[in-house]
Amino acid sequence: MNRQAQAAVLFLVGGAMLHAGTTDLYLRYVKAGLRPLLLAAGAVLIVAALATVWYELRRARAARMRRDDVHDHARHEPGDEGHDHAPYEPGDDGHGHAHREPRISWLLVLPLFALILVAPPALGSYSALRSGTALQPPLAYPALPSGDPVRLGLVDYAGRAAYGHGRSLGSRKVEITGFVALDGAGTPYLVRMALNCCAADAQPVKVGLSGKLPPVLQPDSWLDVTGTYTGKRTKDPVNGGIVPFLDVIRAKPVPTPSDPYDESWNS
Image (cartoon, rainbow, N blue to C red; front, top):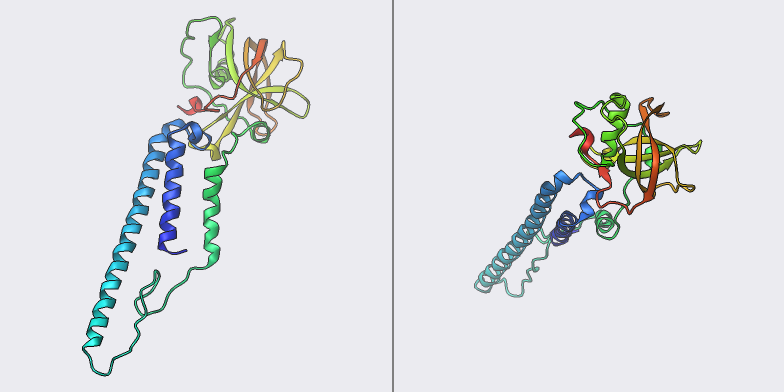
């Protein structure tokens, strides 16, 4: 892989990062607040690629000028007629020895095509059931907003139910959204994956569901659930963390949101 090919790969990676950062695709990889850094990194890679191309063109031009000077000098030197000077080639070390990189280096292009051609799905029930809940005690329990039912993030409800024992919830109806996960015993959970930085460190926050459940629950399907606080709770079998429940009044399927991850747990 010569310098020109390296520049092309840099340019394509930078372009892919800019494409992801200007659409919702980047939300499959990093949290929303990192969009400016992602765009900046993509721009830096494109500038580096263009600078590499400019440097290589300048070096090739300088090499041609040196070769022409040598040829001109040779024509004026007796006894040097017919001496053949090898033309400059990319990768030439200046002494006629071209350095060739191993072909295996082209495997570096494969992750690039994966980034461009394949949009990975958000982490779902498989990951959620194999990781312990990331629920942490909230710093405070602000008053609930107005409305009936009141819209809450799943992490917000879970924190109030698990550590506030529902005191800030009372008998209010709440509405939360998440994807379905079913454990080995068939117990349904509503889950959101919480992010620190990126999808690689995502951890689940789980809310058990009881009450008026749909007759069929499909893992990884998204539900908008309305219900009330219940004191029922269980321990996460993976790490022993608290998993609160919600007493369901009604549930309806909804499309997967553009941002499938929840960042409120550490904000």
